[in-house]
Length: 86
Image 1 (cartoon, rainbow, N blue to C red):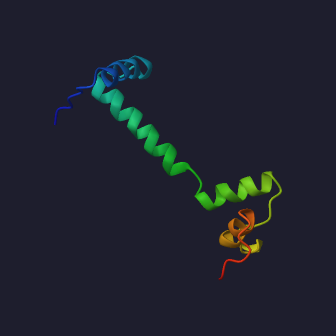
Image 2: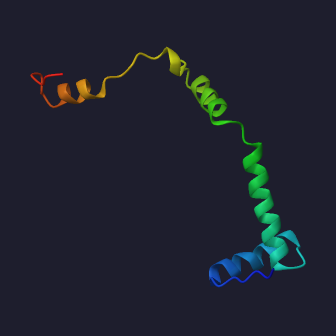
Image 3: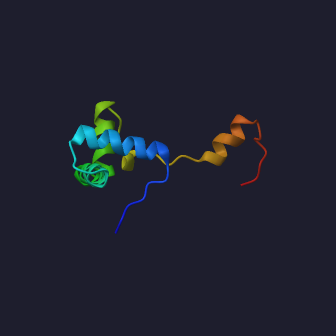
């Protein structure tokens, strides 16, 4: 199945990728680039692990130990609406 690139900027990027990757064709360069992107994404640790790492870096408590936050009460107090019924 042929690959038709109609966007000139995409075509330029494909040509640059072809040179960088020393690929025989633009199609092969695009395939290699896409495979790298997919492989990098598959190797990423799960979001929960990445968040745990950030919490550890900044010495933040675990999410499940935080007290619930009542956003409505916070906003009511911020705007001086102390007589709002709940």
